[in-house]
Length: 95
Picture 1 (cartoon, one colour):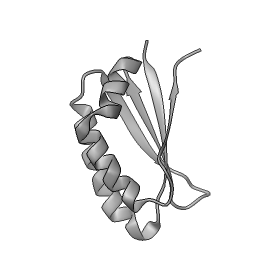
Picture 2 (cartoon, helix red, strand yellow; picture 1 turned 90 degrees about the vertical axis):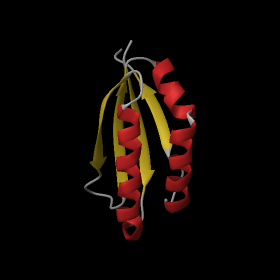
Picture 3 (cartoon, rainbow, N blue to C red; picture 1 turned 120 degrees about the vertical axis):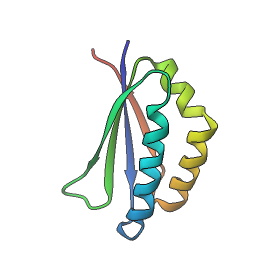
Picture 4 (spheres, rainbow, N blue to C red; picture 1 turned 180 degrees about the vertical axis):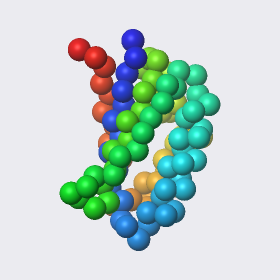
């Protein structure tokens, strides 16, 4: 069963260039993972600095392997050091 993972981040505009480079790197690595289908990054219009990433995966197991992988957690640590708030993950499937 396919899943969608919603990833919410708050970013200071002064750090957006550096963070965008990390986001691109993270997406590139995700694309090489088993079970990755695709994703998109959305920037909130009414609240500066808020982003929503929608990531699609073949299964929750595929997502979980990526979530705990060292390459992802290393980049996530760099992202967390630059953001205003903790990254939040929500997992959904078609009902």
